[in-house]
Length: 273
Image (cartoon, rainbow, N blue to C red; front, side, top):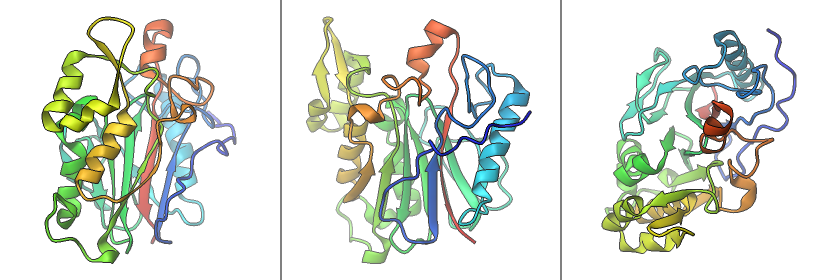
């Protein structure tokens, strides 16, 4: 299969990362999958033609080999948990985790999303990078804090602050937006039990016992509590919403019940060689 040369729609994060740190987030553009996974589906577990997925993944790998790239994406088996994996050049696809990081040049820490929130990390010195898959379950259980604790332990919870060059920067990618993410009272309770101020990230829904939640706001709140002062990207506005932008983003919630399936986008971060 030949992939269309249409990756200009992919997102290059606008964040103050050091020069040797590179990142991107794919969109629907640039692939060969047929509906409902059209076009650049990178998930191999959603019912798409395996040949199409291989072609789409090859297109992403080719993009990472461009100048400033020279990286290989490593795909996780995501389970909506908090497990963090350290990746190196020998790491294989399929490790069971929802976050990963690396100090090895050329290893692209990669998470797949289609409503859940991708969070990319680096430090100002560019010594290491990390990526986390944050659906509401993983976010509530502490996947972001676990990622920080694993790679930047001095950034956490008011402990001795890291030196300026080790200060962590985070970027939030597209996810289901606060006008679309309707949840039950148990979801709100899970976040508020950890931090009562999380209530600010929920709005009453149109049905009793239902709320609209902002994953981006919840992530920003938890990152701030963990000592991450600079968070870029998704601010909860409409252009970042996967549900509200069907021509650009996959959405599991929007498409699976209606169309029978949804593709997956990839968010990647890596150190150049």
